[in-house]
Picture 1: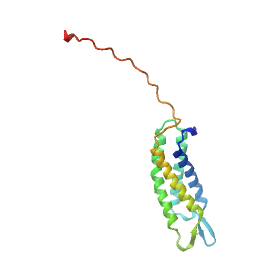
Picture 2: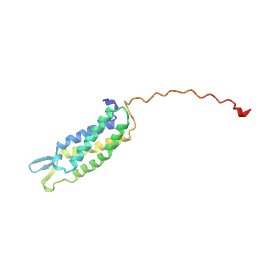
Picture 3: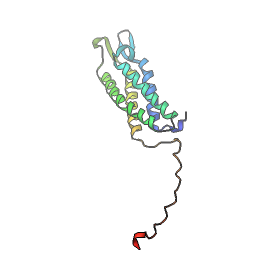
Picture 4: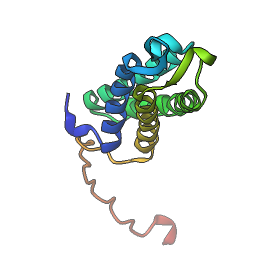
Amino acid sequence: MDLQRLRPADWLTGVAGLASLLLLWAPWYSVGDGTVNGWQTLGLIDVLIALTALLAIALWVVTATRDTPELPVAMDVLTATPASLTALLVIFRLLDVPGGRAITGREWGVVAATVAMIAVAAGAWAALRDESAPGLRPGPEIEPMPAPPAAGPSPADS
């Protein structure tokens, strides 16, 4: 594993993915007798957050461990679109509180998770746009070839 292969966008995606995964256990909403976390209140969105966070962490690991750009670029592509869709769903859950009257308010976890998921999406898209490839193995050495001999007069010219 070579951390010098990671670009700033890869760092953002990986760290925000880890934060998104951990924030599923943070308090998201207030209820009458305490708080509930993301796992307790979100139906399918919590699974999408977890899968997207795992993709973001995998992007970070793959980019740091591979010495060719093919697989890291594929991970960028595979992470960017689901991260964008999941970010939209988390923004929706920030604006539209689930559970009707049972939930009395928002907690810090839903805001932090929204910021983290937006950072995952932004990092994945920025990694797609960044064409630099630090720390990769050098390409094959190019051997100069001698030029072909100059053509002399052809026998047809005589």
